[in-house]
Image (cartoon, rainbow, N blue to C red; front, top):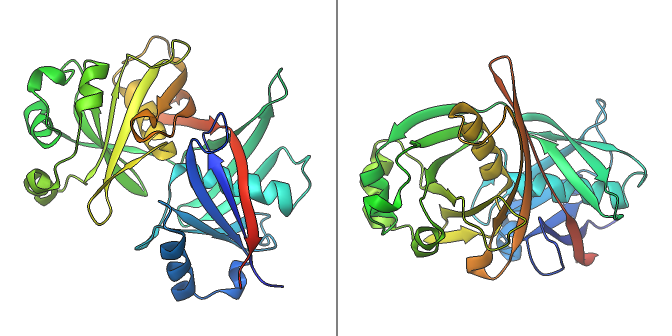
Length: 294
């Protein structure tokens, strides 16, 4: 049987919003080189490749590719891939699907709400809070003034397979004006700070949401992600570490993607368990296209 592909919108409240993802089922039939070519052909921020049957531990082997390289872990592909597996490869009544990724096995759960909608959740892998930078350095690379950075919180790197910088901003206006300047970033990159930058503020487009975010990354120039699951997971650990949100247990709605015309909703749950960050990220998944590879 030829591999099939499915396109879904993750963290979407309606079709053609959120973060699009291509999922190709039948990865056992494809070489790594072919996977990379297909990811470049799809040209989404990520394309996933999943085996048709689970491995001995019950998890489905999944590989994640950007148009230019394979990566270990990222958020919205986890949710979208698990949704496709549950919808097309297993029983739709399964409450949990396990994905075997490079970073280890990641369980994905499905929760029904009172209005009949279903939220898909993943448990983030262990995260490490790393080096801090200065407000002045990141104001410069984002085209902002130092006054736009919320200096009550640090600019800090967080890692879990991939790494990103968390930058707190004072206002939605500062968020709107943010734009990553790669040329200006070169000195920070030389210091080991990755050119993946997650900015957030407390002002939102929608009053029912708690935070607004944007995520910039380097991919043949600067691109902006409409919805970033691993960025939200990083933010959960960051908020817990710095006690930046009321309560010991977080339940937060994060909006993203408005500036790139793909409004997204990311749900975040987080708490401390001893010294470990326990962070879950959830959202809706909506199908748009399916077909067969020729």
